[in-house]
Image (cartoon, rainbow, N blue to C red; front, side):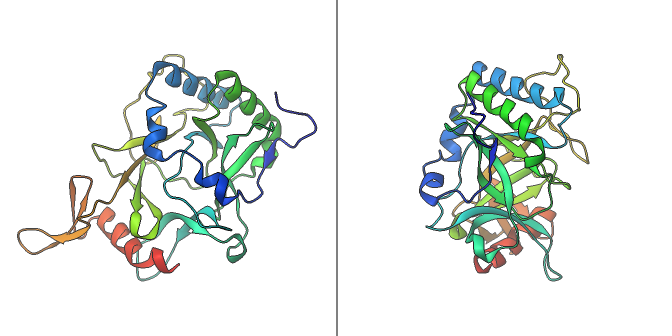
Length: 265
Protein backbone atom coordinates (compact mmCIF):
# COMPACT_ATOMS: atom_id res chain seq x y z
CA UNK A 1 0.00 0.00 0.00
CA UNK A 2 1.04 3.64 -0.29
CA UNK A 3 3.86 4.56 2.06
CA UNK A 4 3.39 7.39 4.56
CA UNK A 5 7.06 8.36 4.02
CA UNK A 6 6.48 9.29 0.38
CA UNK A 7 4.46 12.17 -1.07
CA UNK A 8 1.17 11.14 -2.61
CA UNK A 9 2.04 12.88 -5.88
CA UNK A 10 5.17 13.12 -8.00
CA UNK A 11 5.20 15.77 -10.73
CA UNK A 12 8.88 15.66 -11.66
CA UNK A 13 9.67 15.18 -15.37
CA UNK A 14 9.04 11.57 -16.37
CA UNK A 15 11.99 9.89 -18.09
CA UNK A 16 11.67 9.31 -21.82
CA UNK A 17 12.60 5.63 -21.45
CA UNK A 18 9.82 5.05 -18.92
CA UNK A 19 7.33 7.00 -21.02
CA UNK A 20 8.21 5.04 -24.14
CA UNK A 21 7.50 1.80 -22.25
CA UNK A 22 3.83 2.78 -21.80
CA UNK A 23 1.33 0.81 -23.92
CA UNK A 24 0.27 2.26 -27.25
CA UNK A 25 -3.32 3.48 -27.29
CA UNK A 26 -4.47 0.61 -29.54
CA UNK A 27 -3.01 -2.01 -27.20
CA UNK A 28 -4.24 -0.20 -24.09
CA UNK A 29 -7.77 -0.12 -25.49
CA UNK A 30 -7.88 -3.92 -25.55
CA UNK A 31 -7.41 -4.03 -21.77
CA UNK A 32 -10.68 -2.14 -21.23
CA UNK A 33 -12.89 -4.48 -23.25
CA UNK A 34 -14.00 -6.68 -20.36
CA UNK A 35 -16.79 -6.47 -17.81
CA UNK A 36 -14.18 -6.47 -15.03
CA UNK A 37 -12.49 -3.39 -16.52
CA UNK A 38 -15.83 -1.60 -16.83
CA UNK A 39 -16.64 -2.38 -13.20
CA UNK A 40 -13.22 -1.12 -12.12
CA UNK A 41 -13.71 2.10 -14.05
CA UNK A 42 -17.12 2.57 -12.42
CA UNK A 43 -15.56 2.07 -9.00
CA UNK A 44 -12.96 4.75 -9.66
CA UNK A 45 -15.53 7.19 -11.02
CA UNK A 46 -17.70 6.53 -7.98
CA UNK A 47 -14.76 7.36 -5.71
CA UNK A 48 -14.29 10.69 -7.50
CA UNK A 49 -18.00 11.53 -7.33
CA UNK A 50 -18.39 10.53 -3.69
CA UNK A 51 -15.73 13.09 -2.78
CA UNK A 52 -17.40 15.81 -4.85
CA UNK A 53 -14.44 16.05 -7.24
CA UNK A 54 -16.02 15.30 -10.61
CA UNK A 55 -15.11 18.79 -11.81
CA UNK A 56 -11.47 18.22 -10.85
CA UNK A 57 -10.59 14.66 -11.85
CA UNK A 58 -11.28 12.16 -14.61
CA UNK A 59 -10.33 8.53 -15.18
CA UNK A 60 -7.95 8.12 -18.10
CA UNK A 61 -6.79 5.20 -20.18
CA UNK A 62 -3.08 4.72 -19.41
CA UNK A 63 -1.48 4.95 -22.85
CA UNK A 64 0.84 6.77 -25.21
CA UNK A 65 0.43 7.86 -28.82
CA UNK A 66 4.09 8.33 -29.76
CA UNK A 67 7.50 7.82 -28.21
CA UNK A 68 9.35 10.90 -26.95
CA UNK A 69 13.02 11.75 -27.60
CA UNK A 70 15.55 11.73 -24.77
CA UNK A 71 15.17 14.64 -22.31
CA UNK A 72 11.64 15.41 -23.56
CA UNK A 73 8.25 15.09 -21.89
CA UNK A 74 4.79 14.85 -23.43
CA UNK A 75 2.98 18.16 -22.95
CA UNK A 76 -0.51 19.53 -23.62
CA UNK A 77 -0.58 23.14 -24.84
CA UNK A 78 -3.25 25.48 -26.13
CA UNK A 79 -2.11 27.15 -29.35
CA UNK A 80 -3.60 30.58 -30.04
CA UNK A 81 -3.06 32.86 -33.01
CA UNK A 82 -4.76 35.50 -35.10
CA UNK A 83 -4.15 33.61 -38.35
CA UNK A 84 -5.52 30.23 -37.27
CA UNK A 85 -8.16 28.76 -34.92
CA UNK A 86 -7.30 28.11 -31.29
CA UNK A 87 -6.67 24.43 -30.62
CA UNK A 88 -5.02 22.13 -28.09
CA UNK A 89 -2.08 19.94 -29.04
CA UNK A 90 -0.03 17.28 -27.26
CA UNK A 91 3.59 16.89 -28.35
CA UNK A 92 7.05 16.11 -26.98
CA UNK A 93 8.81 19.16 -25.59
CA UNK A 94 11.94 19.92 -23.57
CA UNK A 95 10.83 21.04 -20.07
CA UNK A 96 13.27 23.95 -20.03
CA UNK A 97 11.72 25.39 -23.21
CA UNK A 98 8.28 25.76 -21.62
CA UNK A 99 6.52 27.99 -19.12
CA UNK A 100 5.58 26.29 -15.87
CA UNK A 101 4.15 22.81 -16.41
CA UNK A 102 2.09 20.66 -14.07
CA UNK A 103 1.09 17.03 -14.08
CA UNK A 104 -2.03 16.29 -16.11
CA UNK A 105 -2.19 12.48 -16.02
CA UNK A 106 -0.93 10.32 -13.16
CA UNK A 107 -0.47 6.56 -12.94
CA UNK A 108 -0.36 4.48 -9.76
CA UNK A 109 3.38 3.83 -9.47
CA UNK A 110 4.79 0.84 -7.53
CA UNK A 111 6.45 3.18 -4.99
CA UNK A 112 3.09 4.33 -3.64
CA UNK A 113 2.84 7.63 -5.50
CA UNK A 114 0.55 8.89 -8.21
CA UNK A 115 3.22 9.65 -10.79
CA UNK A 116 2.78 12.28 -13.51
CA UNK A 117 3.61 10.98 -16.97
CA UNK A 118 2.01 13.69 -19.14
CA UNK A 119 1.95 17.41 -18.44
CA UNK A 120 0.11 20.62 -19.32
CA UNK A 121 0.85 24.33 -19.53
CA UNK A 122 -2.86 25.25 -19.37
CA UNK A 123 -4.52 26.47 -16.15
CA UNK A 124 -5.90 23.64 -14.03
CA UNK A 125 -6.47 22.76 -10.36
CA UNK A 126 -3.34 22.00 -8.35
CA UNK A 127 -3.44 18.24 -7.83
CA UNK A 128 -1.14 18.62 -4.81
CA UNK A 129 -4.06 20.16 -2.90
CA UNK A 130 -5.78 16.77 -3.10
CA UNK A 131 -2.89 14.58 -1.98
CA UNK A 132 -5.01 12.64 0.52
CA UNK A 133 -7.58 11.83 -2.14
CA UNK A 134 -4.83 10.86 -4.59
CA UNK A 135 -3.53 8.36 -2.04
CA UNK A 136 -7.01 6.84 -1.93
CA UNK A 137 -7.06 6.59 -5.72
CA UNK A 138 -3.66 4.88 -5.68
CA UNK A 139 -4.97 2.34 -3.18
CA UNK A 140 -8.18 1.72 -5.12
CA UNK A 141 -6.37 1.24 -8.44
CA UNK A 142 -4.05 -1.32 -6.84
CA UNK A 143 -6.92 -3.05 -5.03
CA UNK A 144 -8.62 -3.40 -8.43
CA UNK A 145 -5.42 -4.61 -10.08
CA UNK A 146 -5.72 -1.94 -12.79
CA UNK A 147 -2.46 -0.04 -12.28
CA UNK A 148 -1.49 -0.85 -15.90
CA UNK A 149 -4.90 0.13 -17.29
CA UNK A 150 -6.30 3.29 -15.68
CA UNK A 151 -4.76 6.60 -14.63
CA UNK A 152 -6.03 9.73 -12.88
CA UNK A 153 -6.55 12.88 -14.94
CA UNK A 154 -6.71 16.49 -13.76
CA UNK A 155 -9.35 18.46 -15.65
CA UNK A 156 -8.46 21.97 -16.86
CA UNK A 157 -10.54 24.94 -15.72
CA UNK A 158 -11.98 25.25 -19.23
CA UNK A 159 -12.20 21.65 -20.43
CA UNK A 160 -12.97 20.57 -23.94
CA UNK A 161 -16.21 18.61 -24.05
CA UNK A 162 -16.71 15.49 -26.15
CA UNK A 163 -13.43 15.79 -28.00
CA UNK A 164 -11.59 13.43 -30.29
CA UNK A 165 -7.81 13.02 -30.23
CA UNK A 166 -6.44 13.16 -33.78
CA UNK A 167 -2.91 11.89 -34.32
CA UNK A 168 -0.59 13.79 -36.67
CA UNK A 169 2.01 11.07 -37.33
CA UNK A 170 4.33 13.30 -39.36
CA UNK A 171 4.81 15.53 -36.30
CA UNK A 172 4.47 12.89 -33.56
CA UNK A 173 1.72 15.09 -32.16
CA UNK A 174 -1.96 14.79 -31.25
CA UNK A 175 -4.58 17.51 -31.81
CA UNK A 176 -7.89 17.71 -29.93
CA UNK A 177 -11.08 18.48 -31.85
CA UNK A 178 -14.47 19.03 -30.19
CA UNK A 179 -17.76 17.54 -31.37
CA UNK A 180 -16.27 15.34 -34.08
CA UNK A 181 -18.02 11.97 -34.26
CA UNK A 182 -16.03 9.18 -35.93
CA UNK A 183 -17.22 5.59 -36.13
CA UNK A 184 -13.92 3.83 -35.41
CA UNK A 185 -12.69 5.94 -32.51
CA UNK A 186 -11.58 4.61 -29.12
CA UNK A 187 -12.70 5.93 -25.72
CA UNK A 188 -9.75 7.21 -23.69
CA UNK A 189 -11.11 9.42 -20.88
CA UNK A 190 -14.18 9.30 -18.66
CA UNK A 191 -15.88 11.81 -16.37
CA UNK A 192 -18.98 11.68 -14.22
CA UNK A 193 -22.01 13.43 -15.72
CA UNK A 194 -22.88 14.76 -12.24
CA UNK A 195 -21.14 15.38 -8.93
CA UNK A 196 -22.83 12.53 -7.11
CA UNK A 197 -22.67 8.98 -8.34
CA UNK A 198 -25.92 7.66 -9.77
CA UNK A 199 -26.23 3.93 -9.14
CA UNK A 200 -28.59 3.72 -12.10
CA UNK A 201 -26.04 5.10 -14.58
CA UNK A 202 -25.53 2.66 -17.46
CA UNK A 203 -22.04 1.42 -18.25
CA UNK A 204 -22.00 3.39 -21.48
CA UNK A 205 -23.98 6.62 -21.58
CA UNK A 206 -24.86 8.28 -24.87
CA UNK A 207 -22.43 11.04 -25.81
CA UNK A 208 -23.78 14.54 -25.33
CA UNK A 209 -22.91 17.91 -26.82
CA UNK A 210 -22.90 21.54 -25.82
CA UNK A 211 -21.47 22.26 -22.39
CA UNK A 212 -22.49 19.00 -20.74
CA UNK A 213 -20.09 16.30 -19.63
CA UNK A 214 -20.58 12.90 -21.18
CA UNK A 215 -19.65 9.64 -19.49
CA UNK A 216 -17.16 8.95 -22.27
CA UNK A 217 -15.82 12.36 -23.19
CA UNK A 218 -12.66 11.62 -25.17
CA UNK A 219 -12.00 9.48 -28.18
CA UNK A 220 -9.00 8.73 -30.36
CA UNK A 221 -8.31 8.29 -34.05
CA UNK A 222 -5.59 9.13 -36.56
CA UNK A 223 -5.21 11.01 -39.82
CA UNK A 224 -4.62 8.32 -42.43
CA UNK A 225 -2.05 8.33 -45.23
CA UNK A 226 -4.48 10.12 -47.56
CA UNK A 227 -4.44 13.33 -45.51
CA UNK A 228 -5.35 16.42 -47.48
CA UNK A 229 -6.90 15.89 -50.88
CA UNK A 230 -9.52 17.01 -53.36
CA UNK A 231 -13.06 15.84 -53.86
CA UNK A 232 -14.46 15.12 -57.33
CA UNK A 233 -15.27 18.80 -57.76
CA UNK A 234 -11.72 19.92 -56.97
CA UNK A 235 -12.54 21.24 -53.51
CA UNK A 236 -10.11 20.79 -50.61
CA UNK A 237 -11.06 17.97 -48.24
CA UNK A 238 -9.41 16.12 -45.39
CA UNK A 239 -9.67 12.35 -45.25
CA UNK A 240 -9.92 11.20 -41.67
CA UNK A 241 -10.57 7.62 -40.60
CA UNK A 242 -13.01 6.99 -43.44
CA UNK A 243 -14.70 10.38 -42.97
CA UNK A 244 -14.37 13.24 -45.45
CA UNK A 245 -14.13 16.67 -43.81
CA UNK A 246 -14.97 19.50 -46.24
CA UNK A 247 -13.07 22.77 -46.27
CA UNK A 248 -14.63 25.37 -44.00
CA UNK A 249 -15.97 23.06 -41.30
CA UNK A 250 -14.57 23.56 -37.80
CA UNK A 251 -12.64 20.30 -37.66
CA UNK A 252 -11.08 20.93 -41.08
CA UNK A 253 -9.93 24.41 -40.04
CA UNK A 254 -8.41 23.20 -36.77
CA UNK A 255 -6.63 20.21 -38.28
CA UNK A 256 -5.22 21.95 -41.34
CA UNK A 257 -3.95 24.80 -39.16
CA UNK A 258 -2.36 22.32 -36.77
CA UNK A 259 -0.75 20.42 -39.65
CA UNK A 260 0.96 23.66 -40.72
CA UNK A 261 2.06 24.88 -37.31
CA UNK A 262 2.63 21.97 -34.92
CA UNK A 263 5.91 20.76 -36.39
CA UNK A 264 7.52 24.19 -36.01
CA UNK A 265 6.43 24.85 -32.41
